[in-house]
Image (cartoon, rainbow, N blue to C red; front, side):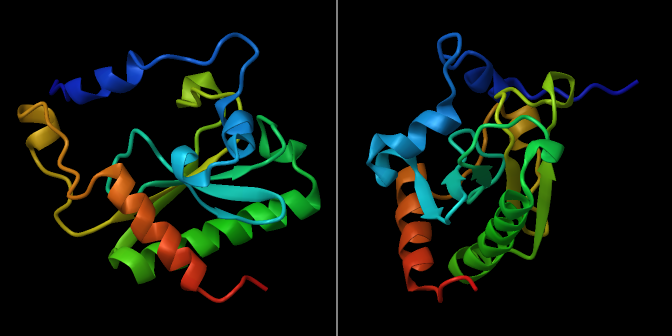
Length: 165
């Protein structure tokens, strides 16, 4: 049996967690500072935030404002808005950083990797050859741009895009 080691994930594992009862995805939009929160776009019922622990450059999360843990808990309007925000995220990333493909998905529940009890979708831009030996052998993630620079790039692009209909 082969083993895959991702030692770089320890940074994520050891990161401080919200106090009991806290919810980072509910708290960040209330900060009043989207740049500090890394929120690149807001819609009426959800928002896009840059993942602080990205799998790839430009890794976004689409998050409903209302805290729920399962898709069935969303209202029809919230589901539609969240899906529109995911589609907007794809278009934003296409315009801003030209990925060739995407991984889009939900981790629902702790056993599935849902480490924050607030539903959110991952939108991960992908390029041919973007998975390499560095995270496994070199204990290093290769992200070609800082989170702050990527935030500015995506936030500026989002402002320039036509509004969602």
